[in-house]
Image (cartoon, rainbow, N blue to C red):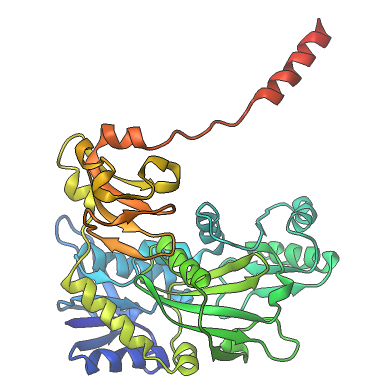
Length: 399
């Protein structure tokens, strides 16, 4: 394969490690300065130029786009995508991950543990927001800070209010976030590649510092994740649409609490702490994706009118539980199960008829839309009885 790495620092550890891993596996690799590109946006022929010359063909791209060049870097990456070249992290997913508020909003609806977070714009809303997240101490974060920069611990409500108001006065957007006391000074970085965690480390701050980032002097040691933490890390990366991510988690009383899903995680800390060839796992993921590209089933199968794709969750369909797949009656209804995701995160592709369906399974199905809709339970509507009673009392009083 011919691999391009977008990086402004060819000698930095992460870029050099990726280059060495690619060359060791027989691939040709080129480091390209993200800011040396120019784009041609034409009908049917999207083009890229590098140092004023047409860019040669590449099979895959690894983006190492710094926060300071996000806008232009994502434009370049989108152009690669328009040219049909695989990028290990798509531009849209990187953009979501760079916006801390947007990423928290996405994760909050997917059953992923996150610290309680508030976002305000007006001065008079600051104090109520601090109270809603549990009061002082609180964490205050710039929306686009990196490596611990722009993350502040405020010990009192007055200090928190003053910090937020000061940042607002400089037109900075900030988050107010609950301080998870039991994780003070430490967190877990899980490195996700594809559908698994390939390495994890626990980062510990030094002295009175509460930020555990290695770039801020924190130490890192290898850690074996529990299934719950590993599943949470993989799900968070997949929800964000990233094939490679550093998922930062706090160890809360209620389990893992996602702090950030980093789309351009450094390799020096994780490789040093674990002794693993993380860069090698990334190159293997490129090989798999380029040789066996994913198929968008919705686009390929939508050609058959009246057919579609749906997830069927077994705990809401008790008639499927504890049965062999062939005995569920799905085939007779012209529904074909093309994959099963177990409650523990295990994926069973192309299951045969002997496999047993268990509580917590999610069945990826292709079939007639009419039959699929019949199996998807209706959402329960919120009760309006209390509102009706209140409105009735008001009506009676008026009479």
